[in-house]
Length: 494
Image 1 (cartoon, rainbow, N blue to C red):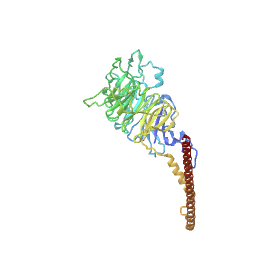
Image 2 (cartoon, one colour):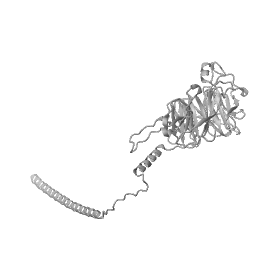
Image 3 (tube, helix red, strand yellow):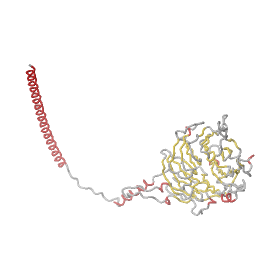
Image 4 (cartoon, one colour):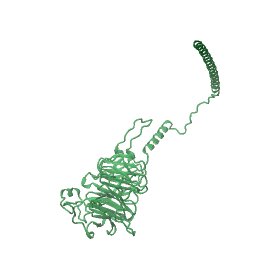
């Protein structure tokens, strides 16, 4: 299987984890030899220079074929479209070509999108940075969001060049361009009100959420807000409002949305807007103590009713959504954990057909896990801190079996290269006489053993009879002694 990754230094890489696995020991090679990481990792663009200003924020596929084309969002607001130039076998790396570039998708929204400029001039309220990229494949649309809550919709149709077709700002009044930032209590400037974005693949809607901003759904075509979440009720004892800070969004199915917060909580919302019983408050949420750190990534596993949760400390959990409910006082029983990640997890994705997930984060490792056994399959060192990952549709294969098979074929062909040569046949030797002699010897041995056993049994019976006679004689002597003693006693008494 092939995996695409993007890091903070602006490098796009294609990885084949099977090529990075160590070779197992066998009869020919008794020592387990490791493979080099270079055998399984290639750059998508070998000429790309490492620059943090062009760091990859997000990647997403732009077509139904999840191995032919994809898009990448840079830290400076640029979007690149990449296309596979040829059909490659699954055992080899692909060859990609950049087919289109959109210079600055947030320019119309008043955002400069440069991370370095934002740090140097934080007082400028019109600056923001890209936070996420997602696609709506059915309509050939890309959706990008920045930290100010601005959304840019990009068309990726092959008939025309890629361009920005619409920009929205759901956090501002009347969907106007975001010009000023709001402030939280305590005179603290909320410089990043938007922290999470996701696209509903079922209805073509965009979900946006952030700090002190509840989750909102808006139509990608019109920009109209069709649904807005509502916070949990205040605490009944302290009457304090629940804090709001959503850091991860994911659509579980066409009617359910999962939200991860910075306050160690996962919530489920019912986002059906056509239903008469439409709800705005969470239908289920995890109690305190289930997670210990800020939630940074969510990946739904719809078939198994499970949700993979990654946090800022590098812990990866598997949560059964059927065990979640309102007002729980204890930790759900069906909560498992994957062992492996050691840095903040940035993204978790699942393979389209296999029960395998891939995770990337600040530990510079690309890891794959099996959902059935919750064990780590591969771990590849990528040298840079990773921000995003994509799974291609290729199935997995066993590289070792293929190599062993090729080695056996070569060895067999080396023994006899001439196929038309006659086989060597040894003369027939009759061994029936030897078998008869062996049978007679075995019969004689068995007869001797039987005789020896009978003799030993007779000797044992004689010994037992002698011992019984001696015992009887001893008993008769004791009786005579007792009789004589009684007679002497009577005489004395008289």
